[in-house]
Length: 356
Image 1: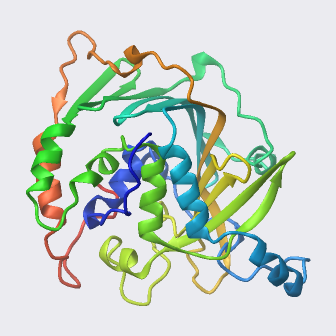
Image 2: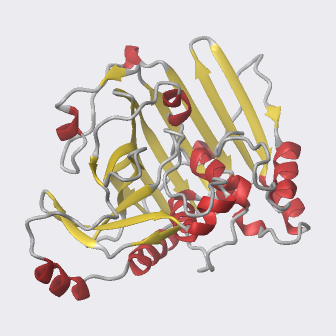
């Protein structure tokens, strides 16, 4: 916030999904993946719509809307011009007929300062009413405090990033030194040190948008209504480069057989304020001949507050007593160096995308 405008970074291949997960997008997918199977979905978001609106009307309306790149650039510029952003987050993962939800608060401020606190709630079977509950106009889901099954806390003061996981009585903490990692990254040919914050998940929402822009190709923007608000809907799918280099898919393959890896993204931006409202990842049917997709992961931002005073103590963190922080700085530096190495030859064994 209050950052100079920068070109989109050249993202290291092996760290691409890690940045999404570290940013709080996708923390539920690892748990949900073991439950995954194919369920009925909605129409492929990148396929021609079988809507009631005649094609001629859609074509006439298209010139009035900005391009996907323009929408995302404007949203990033809006965020970069802020001193602070605070909002409520709700993340919903839907797999194998099971729903997992995390709710929390998010604050970011200038200088890569970030505070993210999530409460994770129990799995529950998906019901017919869940479709309405996931609508853009739907209120946030409600849970009782005693239903919490886990907690995630991530705090960055701009120099050091701490991440704390709590599961029952078990607490795990790790730390990563941003400065040391940036210095090491600057010495690695082909890697942009400016993308370190993104790969560690502390670059804020603007970094998430930048990563999507660098990783996806987009279809024309649509305008949708959510109550009395007009939203711009940006739909994209992984680029050929990302499918090949990151997901290690054979050339010409579009659908990833791993049920927890999405093919599409939808970004909803408020047309008046140009602030984010929702980011949704979708999974294409495993039958590539079917033009169907289903929501896999949905991140909702509500009650956004901009440029309000933020207590600087929010960005300070001390590990709990008797829970020393595991320093992962060197491991991250090694991962950065490995990320610029040539991709394995076709047929070589590789770890699934997103696995750390």
